[in-house]
Image: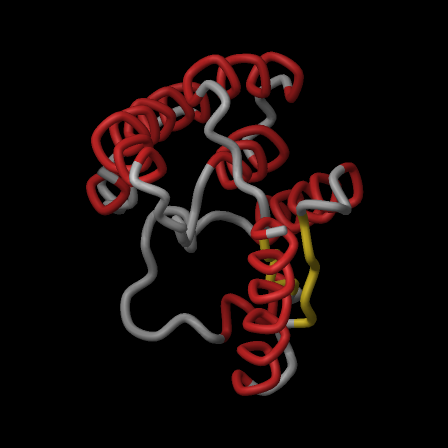
Amino acid sequence: MRRVLLRERLALSPLVEALLFIAGRVQLVEERIRPALAQGAVIVCDRYYDSTMAYQGYGGGLPIAWLDRLGRHAIGCVRPDLTFVLDLSPEAGLRRVKGAKDRMERKALAFHRRVRRGFLTIAAREPRRCVVLDATQPPSQIHRHIANAVLARLAAHSR
């Protein structure tokens, strides 16, 4: 669904984007995440609920409290235990894009600044769950920080 929503020819309002992304997340939770959790699996997602809050809420201007209630109701209690925010200036992030930019990547720099501020706000509000990493570091260092944090969290959960 994400691939379809990012096509540049679609002209979607932040509300339509949010509802469609949330619908996709509900589908993911019902079809994959809940069954895997029931079997004791560890789940890794590259984007989840915080992305909707950052992009459509902070970036797109939807009311944060409303979007938060909608998202929490939609995914229920299936919330991440650990979230990594790879922090990078929007200018640097957009320079890293290879090939054709998708619809989100083509948005104004001000939008991307609001999205970044959104992710950092979420991380500041939930410091036990969110780990902010400097994404200007070499990939090997970022990988090491992530691996160490994941291993520590898994060890804490197994106690």
